[in-house]
Length: 341
Image 1 (cartoon, one colour):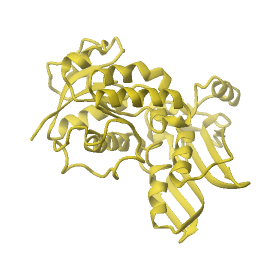
Image 2 (spheres, one colour; image 1 turned 180 degrees about the vertical axis):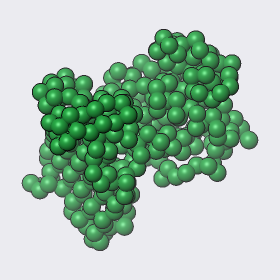
Image 3 (cartoon, helix red, strand yellow; image 1 turned 45 degrees about the vertical axis):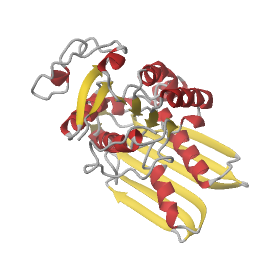
């Protein structure tokens, strides 16, 4: 069984979770690890990952380690904005590695960064590798899942997807990302500075519309605070009554003067009835609910790992979850990944 050698680029909570999981699977070997945190650089990656053993592999801050490692794959988890991670992606591609990334804007980059998307695609084709952005949201709950559910419809008139997440059950960076504990004024200030909120809702909306062949006349996005009605405490912080508990973010698309697409994300500490739902006004109609919702962190780790065989077997270039065969649990596929064609 061939071994897939990979580099983990980014050792934050998600990156570490990805690396730990993939290392545990048959047919994979970590041959490099990258991060810019001075508290991690130089330490053994086994120690950073909390494996309880050394892997004799130091964490580096130098992207040239990718080429020296002779890896086939880079698992990338460093940032949400494509422009801010472009050089990291180029380093991986130029080293001849396929990439699976959690960068939200890379999930459907033509939505916001079409020129950069074309640049990544051209380079990946030239180097004979594939590049995929994937995650739970964007990448599954509000785009790939709704599109898949339309496969049983003869006609689709409207789609509404909703995700309600209790942020108190999530890690501190996410609680901060949704503004938990801020005043309403601080919340809007950070929204204007693009320092707060979910990245990827427009990408999800564009993916769904394009997947259905819908030419949207207008696509809008709004973000507003969810204000705590009572004091809420998490493992990391306390939110007083009247302070911001999180966000409500909505994307809406219209066609022929009608609203045909609504994606609504509510992510706040103390959220009641967390769930994911997709409602399709079609023939036949579809009303699907995932009670409790899909846990974003552990599911992101899973979908990255499960996407690897599909990516390594994909044609070269920039691909999206729309382009790949359905990504499923890949426990029986690990280590049986064909080279890019």
